[in-house]
Amino acid sequence: MKLLNTFRRFSGCLLAGAATVAVVSCNEKTEDVEIYLTPSNVAVTAFSLNEDDDVMANLDSVFFSIDLANGVIFNADSLPVGTKIDKLVTTIKYSSYVTKATINMENGETRTGEVDYLNSPTDSIDFTGNVTLTLSTDNDQLSRTYRIKVNVHKEKTDSLIWGDKAISKLPSRLPDPRNQKSIDFNNRAVSLIEENDGTYTFATSDNLFESTWLKNAATFPFTPNVRSLCATTSRLLLLATDGKMYESADGSSWTATGETWTAMLGSYLDTAIGIRNGANGAEYAQYPQKNLNVCAIDPEFPVSGYSNFVILENQWTSSPVGFFAGGTCADGSLSDATWAFDGYNWIKLAEGGIPAVKGASIIPYYGFRFTSSTWTKTEYPVWMIVGGTKTDGTLNRTVYISYDNGVNWGQGSELLQLPKEIPTMTECDNVVMNVRKKALLSDAWKKAARRSHNVEVDGDNIYWDCPYIYLIGGFGSDGKLYDTVWRGVIARLSFTPII
Image 1: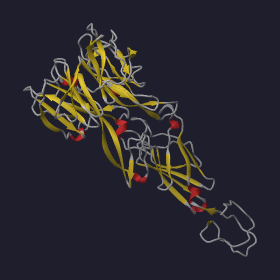
Image 2: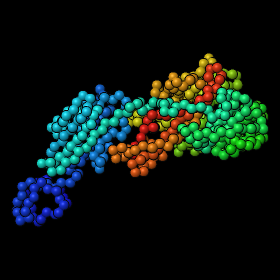
Image 3: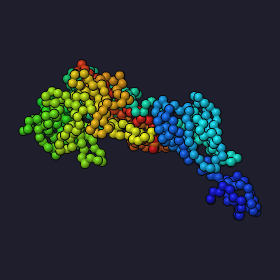
Image 4: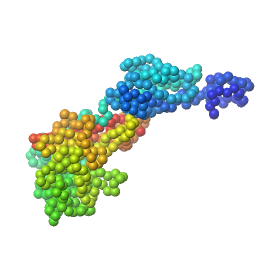
């Protein structure tokens, strides 16, 4: 039915179900004012905060959701910790049928009471307490009340936090293990540990959050170089102390490959890559041999002490690219370079941005940056470097970060630096694993996720995968292994998502 604000002549009878301000006879030729009302007449069509640089830059760009079904107006992406919300001016839009708009404030830190928004739209509102907005039509024939929430984070959203079950022990069978190497093998954490009596433990877990390690004593037909352990998509590979390479499907039994290498760099797809002595002297190696250009290594290519080898793969790469950072060169000098491998050749991808270091650890993770002048942030895949030993023999305490896949490195923000509780380490391993989390969709409004970390909504429950970093082992300046597993997460990723 067409909505009419005013009309003077009316022919025909009113249809049942229409809400009217005046009831009239079908036989009358003329009427006083008549209004047909629906819930849309008292709907909020837009809500925003006014610009106020004293509160926060770009405050007017903060996005607010309007849940008409449940009467809630809210900013799903909360404001930064510490934002003052006790004196904010709003811009609220609604239909021309509204004749009364009242904001009520209860339990605010600086103000309570009512504001006649229709006549005083520039009056400030205290959002620290309970705030409601009531819209009414003429003579209160139709009205609707909305609860307005200006959400503020209770902690710095982009902090790398290490609380909440942050520390546990290595999965050793005996106290004070001597050495260890931990890797991700098809979404399971695998640790090879040398115990204090010279025996070995092989442990696996698919949920480090619960510390559900399966531990077994391991035996080898060779003496393993523990730190050389790596995993391809189908097998584990390990060098013996004499350089001979062995492979295993599950870590329980090992078979010689016939290869002898001087260094294991890591894995690329279903192959291992490293260094061996060959016809060219020290040369690049791959097992099984596929597309690698076998040639003498570059004189500046590190021969030991390199970080873990990580893989980049996205829609812009025709084949995966792997890279590592730092390491010790053949002349004994430490490198500050990042080297990359595309399946065929090795190139020096970048130089500098990090100190010359050996024993660093690269963490594949997520970061958030402003993409424009607006307040909202966008998530990016990032690489972080922690730990390692510098040229002067001291251990690196600074966390470095790259937003462009290792091409450029820079010191991470203060929010990303390690807390004092975590000791400075070298040769620390890391595994990033998802923890399935659950929350309630409070107030019956649908929150939504900044990214699709496998978000699911089931009734009033929301589930999502939260990626946690696990720092495993590492050695102190005294050369002793830390018997610890530290767990950290960017705070923002642990919050209830939005969709």
